[in-house]
Image (cartoon, rainbow, N blue to C red; front, side):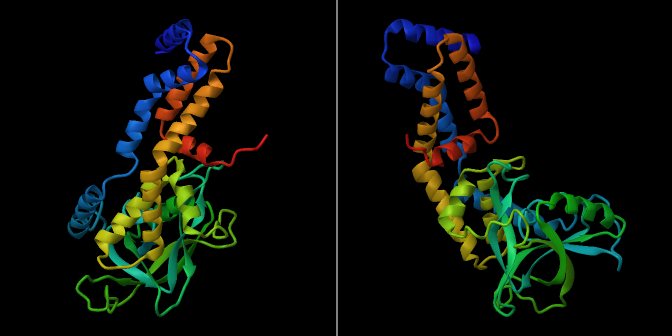
Length: 322
């Protein structure tokens, strides 16, 4: 590929084309396909998400444990309540799970993520809980029963996973019923659960920037070791819609709408502008071989996980005026 890039540059140089035409030709030949891939993969169609959500609901009702031979339940078991990515992706063994909610909290994307959906220099946004009205506010999620023989390892794993500002707390969980007249039930005996909450005192708390468009732009342009930040947002929204029909989470719904709008209206042009800027900078190199090498590196970076978000983040940064 490096030889192909160098040969292409040599041919362009011999053609006598102007700088703008060189830039456009390189972009069209090697980088335009990246934009096409972004259009196809940047945001799943809503009907596709709903189909996946239906499968999640169906498996939830038929598969209570993720173990082939789960240990027997005992009084020494513990329950873990998940309200973020744990709703759709529990990466630990459990012997039972229940849909439900906790009273007195509001779910907000007010926590920076520097180790899952972002990186330290470009943090993403994930959820935490804020105190709310104990009689009105409820947060929906999933409670997982952890066998006594496995709870030590599971809690150690979760302590490490949630190390970026989250602390354990204990509270009551109410099981959800989609046949209840009060929008989800909660009339049964509550279950004592452990959950992880990022307090406002932790270093990664981001609630000082609370405006939905600002949070949405950060989610739109962030990615980390666990994948794109937008994927986290969309997966959570799909899980809420499918596991808790009729439940309202205005903050979540507003963020989804805003990020989708950025993807549809802004992403193609931002990507194109960012790529052209990068290519223009590379073409300032005097040696064609150096240009070819750096263009190859740019192409590779764009195609790696997080490459799209790297370009978007750069395009969204304010430019220093000369």
